[in-house]
Length: 262
Image (cartoon, rainbow, N blue to C red; front, top):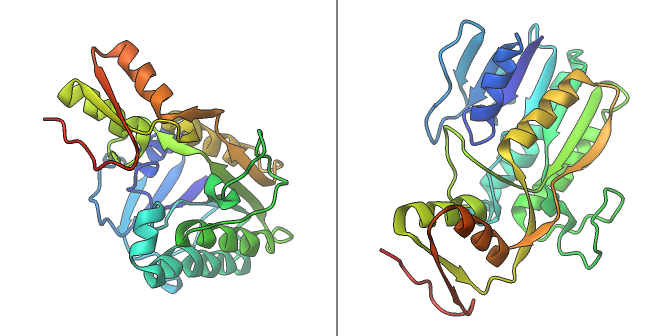
């Protein structure tokens, strides 16, 4: 197939696109490239430096499926400039979905977020629970989901709500707990944990990108899907990392200022 991937040069896209190419797909990789381009050279890869907000000029001719990863990533970044966040993460998504439906594209995979649920008391957060987003980032995800589902009578819509993605990527992120704590252990031999009781599910980057491949090959599976594992506390993560790397773990109250380990 010929596949358009938005946010293609980001953390997940940089792992996903080599897998798509390995399977024989032709890929248009669209990204504004704020953080560069780490994609490999390949005859079936067309890298397009482009602002996703300019949806009108995105070439959809011959596209069989869209994997829409582009957004302003994470809560703190989303709150820095709410207007930009809504333009990139919601408005552009809505406009791209409308164009896709109008131009007959049959398959749209959307990277939402598990954070759309907000804070829940339930032991298991399932797809039928209410959405109560609390930040600009996850509010834009919820709105985009609702818009995309309104097109489900005209194209296959698959929405993925991932847990926190972790693991190695050519375009690495060190603002997520597993990656950040691992880097502390590797560079300093010391992991500093503030509080440690904070818990959140995680998913490895190979698993989430394999899920996108699975959905691409199985358009009959429509709707919304959580993707992740059980909640793990920050302290548990640090201890698991410490088992594999000779690392000292320092636990401090979460209301204390950060301790810088050299």
